[in-house]
Amino acid sequence: MVPAYLGMAALGAIDYFTLAGHEVNLDPQTMTQVTDRLFALTAVPTMVFVIGHIVGTILLGIIVFQAHLTPAWVAALLMVSQPVHLVAIVTSLAWLDLSAWGMTALGMAFLAIRVLRTPNDQWDLPPYDAAPLD
Image (cartoon, rainbow, N blue to C red):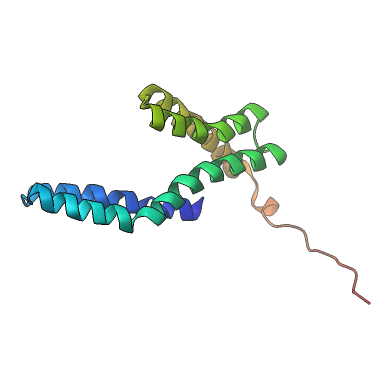
């Protein structure tokens, strides 16, 4: 998920250019040419973001479920939240997108509480006592 969210910065490049181009009164033809080029330059990080944050959140939900870090229903919400977000984006349903990000926020809130309640001495794994290889 970390590379995915780092790739999200590429999405802002086009928005920032559009705002700046409007402020300096660039002509529409130049705006279109530069925007098309920006789309081409940011295609890879944008795809890393799109795929990574969806797959990463699904995997996080699976890990949370397997480790019993939250109630099962919270882990399930995490697993489905970003696929629901994708559906909301494709269908332009703002209420569904709000619901999807609400599910993500709820799951992350449960995990944050879990982190805050975990005592410091439980963060490290015990030493591994492996038998020597002969």
